[in-house]
Image 1 (cartoon, rainbow, N blue to C red):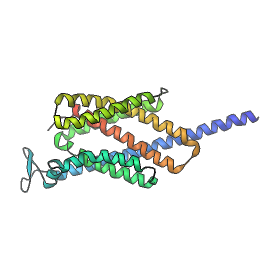
Image 2 (image 1 turned 90 degrees about the horizontal axis):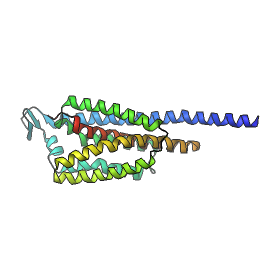
Image 3 (image 1 turned 180 degrees about the horizontal axis):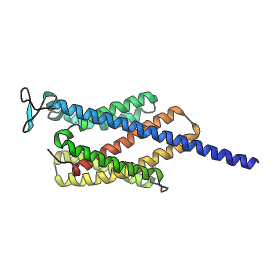
Image 4 (image 1 turned 45 degrees about the vertical axis):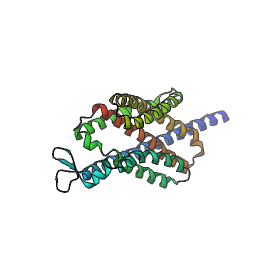
Length: 257
């Protein structure tokens, strides 16, 4: 009888962990989705304010019938563009350093502020690519991301060793991308884009598995504050995987204006 009670308690605990894990993952994906929506709206709105069809008061022409406004010139054709380009990266490092000192509500607010800043940083895609190709690439990225994340959640294979390799590759493409800003090499740009798609595809599966295993490892403590911040950090990681996968795919699938 005592043995039966022990088994029953074990089953109950396992069921509680499974239920909690589903709720945790739903919160991760929900937070990530809100962040993506904020980024999309911010990017579209900022690009709309940066471009005009009225040459009166415009500061520069970007193509026939379209001109940069004063805001557009400041964002895309002044030294401020370098600040905008690297600000999201700096904010990610700041978030990682501050997460333990922030409350769960503060961490969530930080994440949404980051999503707005990312929207500003990538808003120039609306000046470079057609709106249709941006939407098509977003949908393709969504399908690919869903499949990769599902694999990471369900696979029994330990992706930890793969994650270490992917993180080293990520550091490599960040360095190569910065170098290519000054070199302007089409071949290096192509290589970085190909590697970027592969690396962030792998990181999507790896980060999903890590979110799952981290929850299972700490679920027994039932620290609601830790779980809330863990969900936000997980959402940030998957958000970055999605955004970067989208941006690299856009280099191949986007139709330029």
